[in-house]
Image 1 (spheres, rainbow, N blue to C red):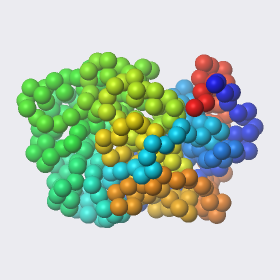
Image 2 (cartoon, one colour):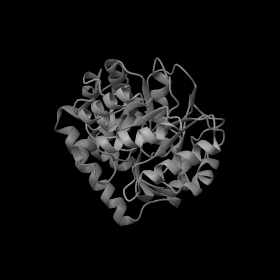
Image 3 (cartoon, rainbow, N blue to C red):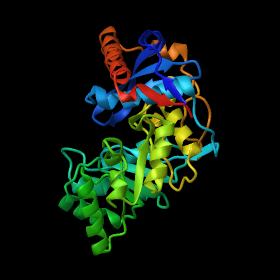
Image 4 (cartoon, rainbow, N blue to C red):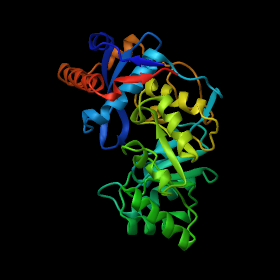
Amino acid sequence: MPVEIPPLEELLDAAHVVSLPMRVKFRGIMERETLLLKGPVGWGEFCPFPEYDDDESSRWLCSALEAGWLGFPPALRDRIPVNATVPAVPADRVPDVLARFGRIDAVKIKVAERGQGLADDVARVAAVRKEIPDAALRVDANGGWDVDQAVEALGALSVLGLEYAEQPVPTIEGLAEVRRRLSKAGTPVLIAADESVRKENDPLRVAKAGAADLIVVKVAPLGGVARALDIVAQAGLPAVVSSALDTSVGIRAGLALAAALPSLPYACGLGTVSLFQSDISRDPLVADDGEIRLREAVADPGLLEQYAASGERRDWWLERLRRVHAVLASSGQGLFTES
């Protein structure tokens, strides 16, 4: 049944803003800021990146409210396989990054970083393959190539054995063209759509266009677990559940989605808590033997205080919460559906 969003004052009273240091630069940052909300049924995380506008950020708030005020759908599994994540580091840093993840069966490797070239990407992927010869490798370009660059790069990287390439180019039309050209060339790399799902007004357009072999789904950008489940069902494509550089609170929502999917054919990109120097939970949701056990994520008061954002940054996030709450309250997104 439809449920109204909580009043703004309730959210402001429940809000905690933290800034967590990263072990390595990821997405160009060394500090990850996020706003955590303690609701009546659990913790929710509101952490759209600073450049996202209020309309796009409203889906992230819906997700946080679902987690804290409604709860998640029933789980079909209690352990979720996860991949390690290697940022766009120099090849000689790959062993140190991988060492933080324990046993690894799958690795996502960032490629197409601004200021780097194909040789850097090949060296990084080769270093991962050398460290873990039998792992399933997938690369993520975050739309950083054009079609010609993507076809060239994936041709070169495919000899190292790739499970799939995530968002090699920015547009749906470009994904379809890359997929067509790889198939014609006999290059054995599947195409996964990420931004073309979560940043589109119609998240199903990529499936309708036949532009991808699988989709990457992230709970917060899609507006919550219930909505993400519906999108996967309608898309009719295999899904990989991934995170948006969340704390354990956000990872808990990703695990809820992975646990509720009828089928989970790929390891999930939910191991990113290992990229933080510290989490906000004393029992962080990190991989153990290649999996994360499904459990609750509870923010620790001492850690919330230790990593509390500065007054200026806290004010920035609270003002953002006010604006995004207003977007929900005044639009059709103002209601979300109870599972």
